[in-house]
Length: 224
Image (cartoon, rainbow, N blue to C red; front, top):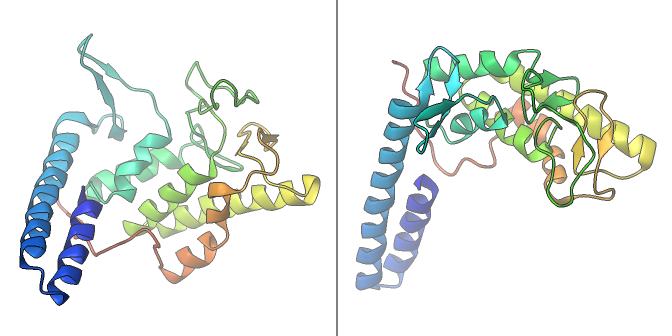
């Protein structure tokens, strides 16, 4: 929603240079709606789903009215969206740093403590997100961590990811879609590129403090 608001602001600016009054007013109205939606989603996320005892946001089953406490890569996404305060970010970083989440090749897609944890080499009929390292999820986590000042952890994760991709190139001369967090083995779709290419400038971006996903500054709340 925040990104949609920023795009609407850009459209309004472009339209104003052409003197399209009605278009400008329409885009400005979109900005207000999208920012309100973004703020509401952020408030709801932190008021309803934040679990300080776990150190991350948990899901809530609306049917059974019970918590779903599965620890997966998704817990890093609020950092990337800059949707938490500094204390929450520190708790999430600590959770991601745990041995059950951080493997030799990067963050696991699912905690190794989860009974469903698996590094099965499968992509059909669906991809395995129950354990393997996925480059796209790791990249977003790295930029999110860096945004909150957890640069050392972000660099450590990024280094492990890049090292895994480099090892794959040396061994098989191609990249794969995912990697085993048990032994670093390449999994599925040999010759895969797509989001693996996000690794190309990951380390240099983190070292220089560059976040290519950042469209505009967002103030990080420091209190709880």
